[in-house]
Length: 257
Ligand SMILES: Nc1ncnc2c1ncn2[C@@H]1O[C@H](COP(=O)(O)OP(=O)(O)OP(=O)(O)O)[C@@H](O)[C@H]1O
Ligand SMILES: [Mg+2]
Image (spheres, rainbow, N blue to C red):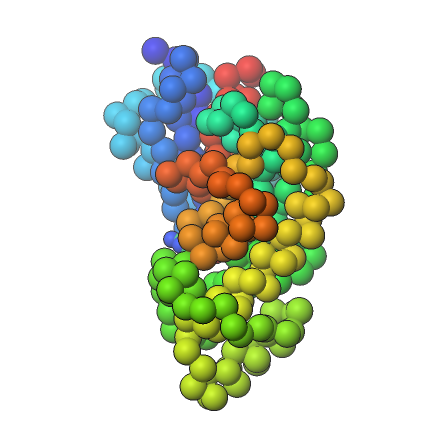
């Protein structure tokens, strides 16, 4: 059988998705990007192939996306993340009208039309606040693993407000809140509200259309997701592995090469 691969080299993680000729997912992998994008892409591809038992020669086409897409020598084509997240989300959820992708380095809100076509988008890539990086900085400052941030914030009340709009100043604010013995859950809740307010401004700029899908690693954070859902007044569609949506879109483009 012929197979197709999509590779998404992000600032924080790199994914590979292998599709069969019927557009069914044969396998995928997620690895850390680290300091070398080319190595990360090779590693993600090797891992996805070994998981599925597919030979590299059986992969008839591959497309790279993400911030490191230029560093994937084996990819025949590069496609932007906007197009790939849109395409991947639409494939998973055919009612998709709006995609919110919050990654490690940038956040995007994408409006999707018929056939998964990108109609409009907005992006925040100039500032860490409003991205997963903001939460990574705070999780290490608070010594709370990333995976526990969502649960902690959901369990806490939402009384505390983080007033700094910049990551560096918000970090100092967190340090002083910890020194005042404020409950960590409340601090995390305040941090989640800060990032959600930023992302929500982007959603408003693009508008809410059809079903809302969240992709990217921050979609694993139930605290952020539930605050965004409350603003939208609707539940989001989230794949069980939201980090692979971009690579899936890239693999779908690879089928057309
Ligand atoms: N298990 C987890 N629980 C909660 N949050 C997580 C988890 N894993 C990753 N994240 C969040 O996801 C972010 C990384 O997202 P993702 O892997 O989509 O980024 P990326 O695609 O590499 O970055 P970009 O698209 O901005 O270049 C991290 O900064 C972190 O905030
Ligand atoms: Mg990404």
